[in-house]
Amino acid sequence: MGHGLLGRALTAYYAGSGDKRVLQTLEAGYSGDRDWLRLGWGMSNAWPAYDTYTWTGNREIAAALTTLFSKDGGGKQPGGASWNRYRDPPNPAPDAETNDHVVHFLESTTPWALGYLWTGNRDLLDATLAWHDLLERRSMQPSGVPVADEFYGPTGAFRATETCDVAGYLWSQAALLIITGQGRIADRAERAFFNAAPATVARDFRTHVYFQSPNRVVDGSPPCPHGPGASGCSYKRTHFPLCCTAALNRIVPNYVMHMWMATYDNGLAATYYGPCRLSALAGDRVPVDIVCRSDYPFNETIDLIINPARE
Image 1 (cartoon, helix red, strand yellow):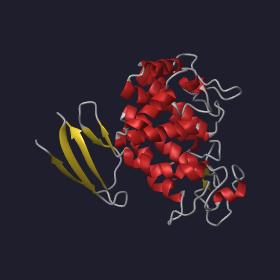
Image 2: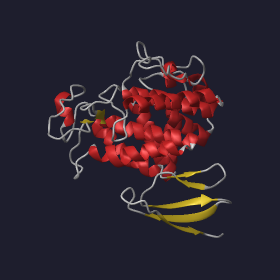
Image 3: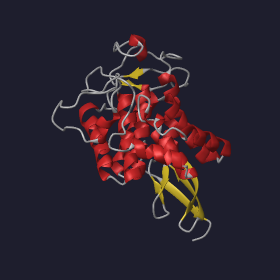
Image 4: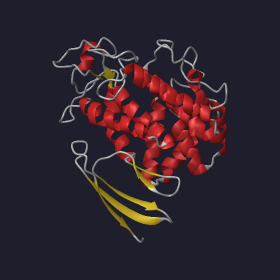
């Protein structure tokens, strides 16, 4: 899964920098054997491969994506959980679905929405939204992220959430917002960002937790039996494994990158709120500079100063 997260970081860097060396690296990485895109623990490579295709038109990448989203295109990891489980909606009956490691859940459900863009099959998007709605109904913490210690399950006084899943949940909602434009999904992301995200790291950004729990009041409580064990609920410089140490650095960029989005009619949409400045093109490629002033979420007032190059 790590190479998929690297791929997403590289596509974000290319989108911001235009560095052609990065695009050449991405194209080389996602070309060739169409089957390797189906390997790994989760479908984390689908999105950067798709972005790379949109920039290059590489036919080998297109063939790999077509195979991935075909009826039997799920994961090929021997003994691993099949991604195909998530191409269909869940059984809504109570406890009908067995839980899953939440990182695997997020990385294996969300890309099926991308499959809707690739194939035009609306069922794939509906299935993805149904799985995320199930996660919200069954496992949502007061802080706006699901129970993830490290599998999802019913909330409880000392259930915890892995820092990887604070980052992963925010990313997944941004991805679903891009495709659906649904305000309720943006609300999910804001709630997670302004509540759970700050709890992952100390104020000086020198230590962090592997797990956070809404009822954590003293160091070492709750016991956090999973992952690194009890120490996972303590603020430390690093935790083993190092996944959460790296993941907490994804949280702020993923929010800031998606505060504004383009619309299909050449407009601009303010999707997440907060102080920011945007320079973009709108309408008939008219340069627009927008400054947003606010101390949201502590205040509901949002001031937008909009300066287009022409009417």
